[in-house]
Length: 611
Image (cartoon, rainbow, N blue to C red; front, side):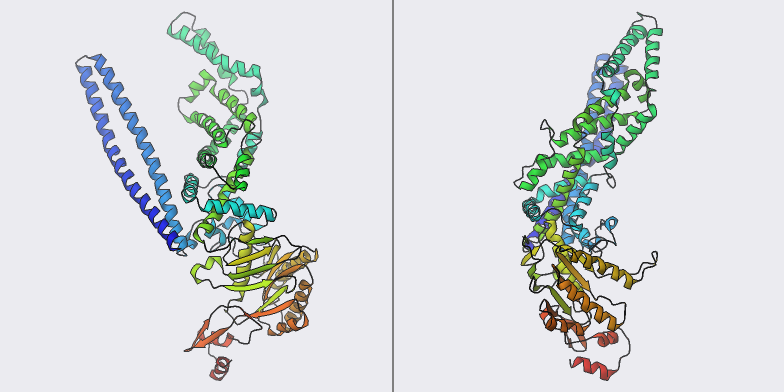
């Protein structure tokens, strides 16, 4: 961790140093431009006053060229400064992540929150202080969604997961490339849009502008009109009404499907800025050689029949759209009439669509997958002591780990060992309040989510089979649907049981089940549920304050008791968060009440401390 921190600090310092140099050049050019303008104008005026028109023209051309050069260079310096600032900020944010300050990151994936999902709400996958907020470096719409998909369910089989692991391992070593890849995505002006409308737009065709005779007319008419205009208006060789008639004819032609054309142009213009970002990111991706078979497959899948790279195709589309954007210019209407420029752009678009319309969605998908892998690679790079999980292909459900900790707790995380398989299928976790029961359940679940995504897990050793993750932890009432928290809990548990009874492998996490009813019904219901789940091809952890449930271990050899405990010292309560075999023997509710300022009988409290 120290080496990683040092690398980030060095890179942050290097980019700060580079930025200061760029700012110095920026100031120099800012001061030089007006001086060049004044000197150029003064020299040109002087040459004009002495009637030296040759030197006047030479000076005007020379200083105009010099001024334009510095304007262009100034623009590039500004762009370089912005890019350098982003690279510096990426390292600054990386240092904050190492310090545990990642919960200040802006993008927490709130838009992916789904209360009906099997586990995302209970395991803090999205929202404030979530896995997504900690892990995400994707900036494009598709990239964010591809990462969310990896965190919301199992993508592919065990081989697919292992291939993603290899890709993540490779990308973890490519710090400079990854940061440049992320920086290119951050250059977008505002939040990047869903490309669905663009994809749909490219699949719509203007068949008329694909016909050879239409293309010929659109190409030849402007040539004829320009020749007539030069011959009639400049050379006075033909009557003026001929070029006027030609211009009127072209003006009339432009009325053809004008509304549809403007609507089509409007859609394309909405993606002009995003396409520039896509171009830079894909160029960076396609120019890099990768060893991972998974990334090679992604890369090979985005070449067209002629083997032309995606970024070149995007650059072509971006150029066409930039030409379309010129219609906002004041003089465009005259140029459009003269050259039928709207039609020229439509022809260019139709040719592009014929070549690339069917693969555009695949290209965006590939880019999103790379962003998702880059996010996972950050975990690998910053946590080299974490292990890549082994994904079991056996028929029986298994979850075995050593030294497992919660990935979002950073240095505060404690580590435990446990195993669940076809012999012991349910771990019953007891312990006093605040001892760590719920955290253990979330630790198991969130690490399993990372494992299926293809990322390393916070453990020394980790093996699991592919299972459907289902949780029942944070269940609340729904006033809109008139559903109480207890009934909502029953619906969630019903869903888990139904999934388990299909015979599929299910990994369940149940926290204080049936807490919304009386103690007798809670105990009876929990006992029936746990026994029922233990008879299926499912495994999981159940936390409870109901110590009577610990008797299940004697009645059912598929259930094992584990517990957390606390200790008291100098009038204070302490927890070590270490998982131990057997049922809990301590309680702390009354003691915690006193710590909260609620009066508790001293005799009762002293009895607790003797436990």
